[in-house]
Length: 207
Picture 1 (cartoon, rainbow, N blue to C red):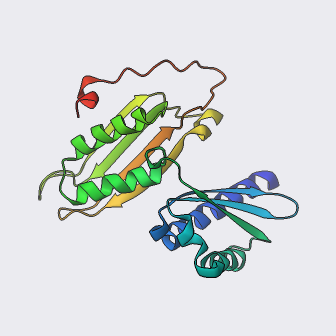
Picture 2 (picture 1 turned 90 degrees about the vertical axis):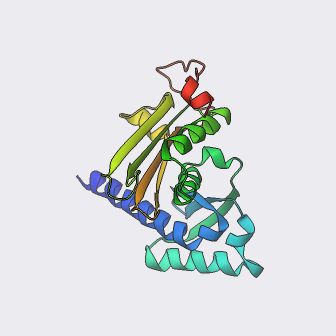
Picture 3 (picture 1 turned 30 degrees about the horizontal axis):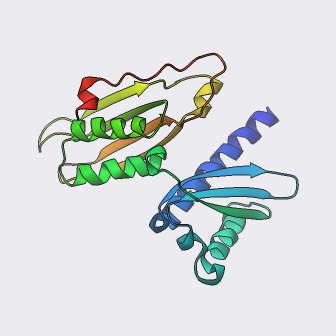
């Protein structure tokens, strides 16, 4: 029971740190965070589009973030490493935010989802799924959901931990739309499965 409680607490702390960094480092293009505890320190790796914005002038920004994480979340000796995102189309949070920006400009949700799936797969992902829920139609229409996927996306078991996922919310004039993106990055190995080449549906290929 103690082990399960610690696992849950660690997951909650990671979620809260991720939320804090997402807000604090939004201008740097925050994508995700990885946390690894060792006997000597807690290594926090932050993936962003613009590392310079995280470090700040003379390291001021990263020092402030480190100090906040130590005090606010009770992390002993946090060490923050900043990594530049190599491909934004393989980062679910950045993909989700890109979708929300287009939805807020009034672009058709189905078209946005299909074209985004095509881009994700063209950038090497082994599978991807996008779900958009909320006010997807004109004023007065009921809320609904669109779910599109391609390739292999495990939904349960330990292998589902190999899937990257994130969510964002769009606020077009007719009401909020939640967007969730899940993808399997290139090179992911599944011991019980051989991933076949993805055959892209015509609706996605021509979107």
